[in-house]
Length: 345
Ligand code: 5GP
Image 1: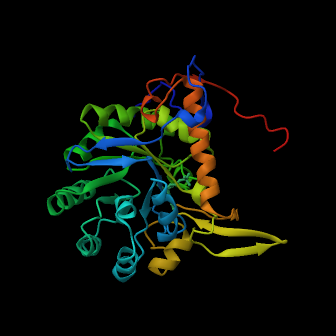
Image 2: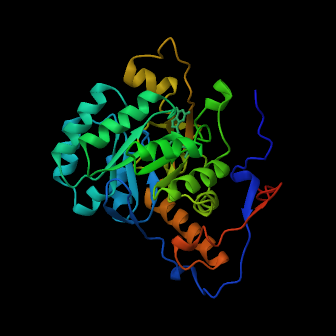
């Protein structure tokens, strides 16, 4: 047994120190980035924030709103090929460029992925998603997807350490999804004791990835726009959001009323709710590792989107970053024991 003694940090443990700046207004800040991917050998330009591939978040309806603003949506894997076909028949080039096709790692998943990609050559992103990115089977699956789809941008995860980030990039992935346990409806840390504080995971994985010309997504744990900025500051090339994008008109999940207030159902993809819905129950050998919650109904996604982008732009002005690209270079984290003042919350 081995104990690592240096402290690992989460969003709640840090703040970003302000720096002298010549920027006058946050309207001067550009959140667009252009990335060139190591294995796919192609580029993408946009605002690198992604709606998570959960069936309550990564919907075609959310993609319409986010895609128009240049953001990405990882479309959840429970849409049928027919539903994809209908969506694609009406989709603009920009929208196609801003969606990811999610897949698991079974043979069925592999075939389904090929079917969807064959529908439209404008689809460029594949998201190979498993709860535990440390299995050999997963690495082999990524190699297989790379071979079958040499020109697509492959996102693979989730992991939280540099060595596995490198292994997946070498196996053919372009972008590594980082995060085990930080999610708002995730119970992995409670059920298994496994996890890694997200800011440290992103710092360590992005360092490993950037050394190989790879990229990383910080996935999970953002509760407010400030956390999104912290994730970028820590070196994330993209930030993926679940809970922050849930509860809107465009979100999946049932709308329920309680005591005169409206809520939307939001649940983890390995919660009892999701397993009942898609697999007819929780498999005996595995515990459910996700919660089901009601989030207050929040209306149009567009409003939340503006709030998030406004926050990140404002962070950039506090540290003197005229472009999102400069944010991590201009970030100094300070370790803290307080966050916001909660007197009136
Ligand atoms: P959030 O932004 O809500 O904090 O986190 C979203 C992320 O939580 C997702 O992108 C995914 O990585 C993770 N997640 C979604 N559902 C589950 C689940 O049922 N169990 C676990 N362990 N993680 C989940």
